Image 1: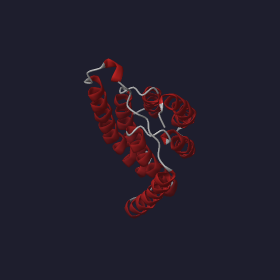
Image 2: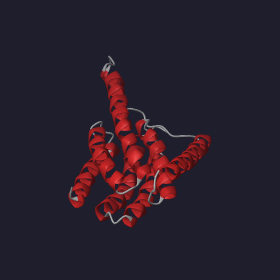
Image 3: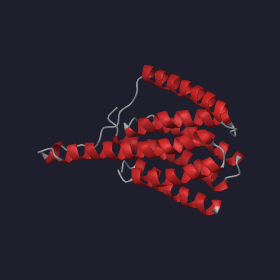
Length: 196
């Protein structure tokens, strides 16, 4: 398969995902699932095994996010008084929750690194494990509509851009640079709607 065509397809689907997520559209999950399936193949062929696992996780998280946001939308639509209908609430973590979140991400990274090191010859296993662990936990924050997810994504996306650049995936590197910028946009959009 032509990797440039594959990268451009993943790029387009992921940009649609992120723009729709920033606008809190439930349709973001469909584009994210499609992009993750294609990107899983690319990560496997590029020997970024933690990123491959991450893409599989994104597929499952996308299904969960679609169901969760859909259920909340349905509950909201079933309210009797139209004046009482509200958007799915955007929340924020406390300082203690941030500390625990980071400890879980770091712990997950070391576990993933250890598993990958025992199993296969991987490219950049430590960096791959850290970006993957943080991305898994941060995706959970997105499904729960936690505002600070966007700050974590800025760091994850910028670091992943370096990882993809090292593999020679120029289109996906560009995607991650754009994701870094769009994470700031996502934060501003959610901040306007937040009640935190």
